[in-house]
Length: 186
Image (cartoon, rainbow, N blue to C red; front, side):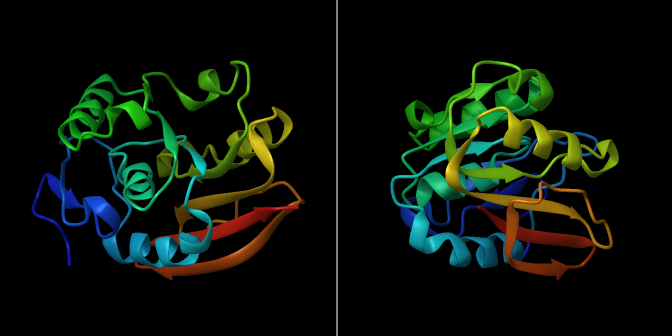
């Protein structure tokens, strides 16, 4: 089921069926609902209390879904001012803004700051920018990942980004033109 134009819904947890306003911006591509459902079924055993990083947040659907299902907090990173503003508004309306700070900067700049290790990272950059390998390297080498962190990677079907060798594939799938995979840091 697809949300109405300009809106998507949270599919599980305490915010289930809450709607997120989605600004009409070029390249903004919310993770499809059925992909989120599969991903969060995979993540169910580890979500309670985890600190997460939604690195290329866009709508924030992945991070908000994590908050809805028990994550202790999510750091959102979104460089587009309108998308960051819409994300802040959605977080405030859902009364979870205190658990979800939004950094209005690009992912590479954010990863240049002093690291804070996260147990879960969502790595879903705009497809046209081809940032997977560079951001994965910075996450791995920069101290951003807890010792056994989980990393979700979403990319175009057929793409094979070079990821760190110690990111072990846990589960993966495809939906339409999207390939998605969950990795465990070893």
